[in-house]
Length: 339
Picture 1: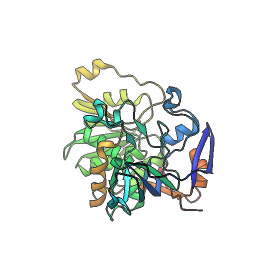
Picture 2: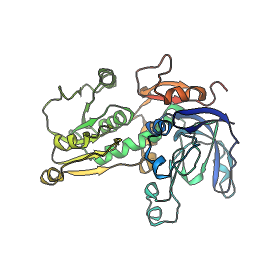
Picture 3: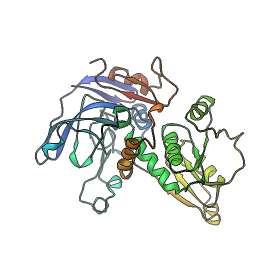
């Protein structure tokens, strides 16, 4: 089968690789759609910290925002999974450690991460093998575009939940990229008044086109009390800014991650009685995200600017925009295109 293989920093190719087999406890999925993520870009550039710690190494096969259809099952797997449309958890714990036993497999010290960590091949391929316990079935109303947006949506759902806003509360999201916009959608679905803070005019214009009229730069941000701030940016100064902007007794949620250390003044955190929360993964948010997509409470399909085949992934990872792209921040890949 064909798969995207990263052989080193800046080196990406579509190669013929052995098709996966369904070993006991796992299934094989025919991939329908995959999202290209910032983590994939960092794997391509060599900047992801896992490459320094040894949790990831080249060659590797990326892709962790996916959906598809189960076409084979291994021993011990219910055959009823055959033919089902599914997505899956990126974080695969060892299932025996204390964290896994407590339902926190996404922070298992020995976890694999699909397409990222621990030599678990990713979904930028025609087929993918994953453990059956990682699967989430997709209802018919969740099409392939939505299916490949479940994983980033799960992260955003968790960020919105951590913000703990009620109807009528005011929330600010720093960073109008994919995760920031998804978080804004989930906050809006909770009844919050949502503001966005960004840098570039095109990204803010796109946010306004999604119905977020209150989209600002630092120079135009109004002086309004904010009950929760979600930092979905990669700016190392944003967590401190979030702490400065949030109301006393409010909440700061950090879901963006910078390439260099971020610092905050914990005296401010204490004296303002602020709750600060970090969000690592989508794992606990996958099921509620699927439900939000199923009901239409959140519809992030406008975020997808283009859908390309495997052959175009290298150019996307290098920062290129596919010809005819829309204004959205997300590029999807359909491995069946150009086959």
